[in-house]
Structures are given as C-alpha cells and as structure tokens.
Length: 168
Image (cartoon, rainbow, N blue to C red; front, side):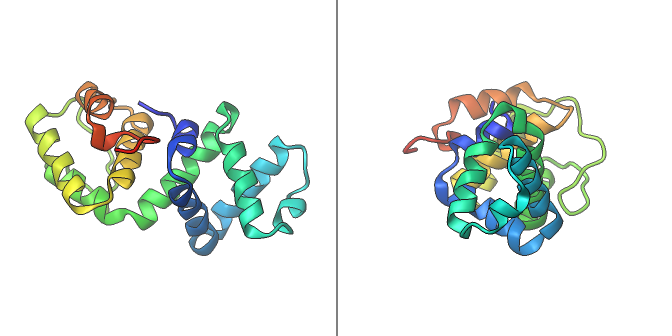
C-alpha cells in the first residue's frame, strides 16, 4: 500500500500532471497551497515558481511532492482530484459495497468489508475506469481512511491491474 507522496512518485507523468492541471484549473486555493508548500520546502519564494513556465513549474512541484515531508500536501492534492473530478468512481465503489455515501464521501466506514463484495466492487471500477486511476483511488482510499481494510491491501499488492509504475 502506497502513501500519498509515494503515489505521486509512482503514477505516470501524464496522470501526475493531470492532478496538478486539475487543481490549477478547478481549485485555485489548493493549487496555491501546493505552490506555497513546495516553495517553502525548496527555500524559494512562491512567486519564483509562479513565474516559471507551467511545464517546468509542474516538474519541480512533482519532484518535490515525492518527498516524505510532503505527505500532507500530496494527500491534499490527491483528495481534491478524487473528490472533485473522480466523484462518479467514488460513488460507484461505495455503492457497489452497499456503503451509504453522499457524492462519494462517507462519514463512517465499516471496520471490514466482505471479500466477495470488495472483489466485485473493484471489478466494477476496473471495467469502467482507467486502471491507473482506480489504483490511485484504492491506494488513497485505504491509506487515508481510518478503516484500513486488510483484504483491500492484499488486492492492491497482488492484483497486477492495480500496480503503479509498471507496464501492467
């Protein structure tokens, strides 16, 4: 199971840039928060990053977000992208598990979930969404929630379709 800063390091460059592009276009406060945190980590003024061409700025941001100290910022970026852009996937997963949710957000998750229900829910996602996007969501879901499901962790580690940073 990967943490948020590890997820940023293992996703394809295209998906990593999609995360930043989405924040840049749809959630300016989140994007500015990422820039401020990266600038601070690199001992720069935020304006220095803001004046760089976007491709160069994003390369700098993504490199910095892979550091363990940037876990919270990487997690926030992933959450913004998931909750705002990937809402249908979140809803599909929780609905397939028969977990009450409001637009893919849950107040209290069950401590465990049935293996067969989980496998069926993951299959629903893999049939409908890009495998890399599903892998990011499921890793983030299990890492960021208090209910850390052992059977989901086993699936993430064992199913080649859910591996990041590989040709699968």
